[in-house]
Length: 69
Image (cartoon, rainbow, N blue to C red; front, side, top):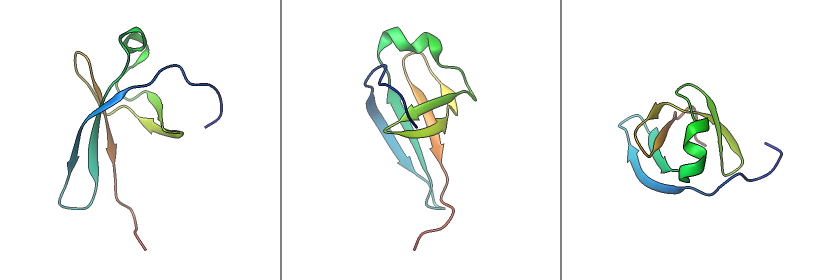
């Protein structure tokens, strides 16, 4: 990803699953929430991810384990 930072969110929860993946929930700044849509893109720490779920004041992304060394 290249560009600028629109805001800084807070990771509110990380849930690991049995297959080694993770569900990460982030609380973004209030002024940026209106730009988030389910299945839309979001950049977290320089990585482009897909919004898997939206709640009132958080969004979640799913990290899928593909292969680990």
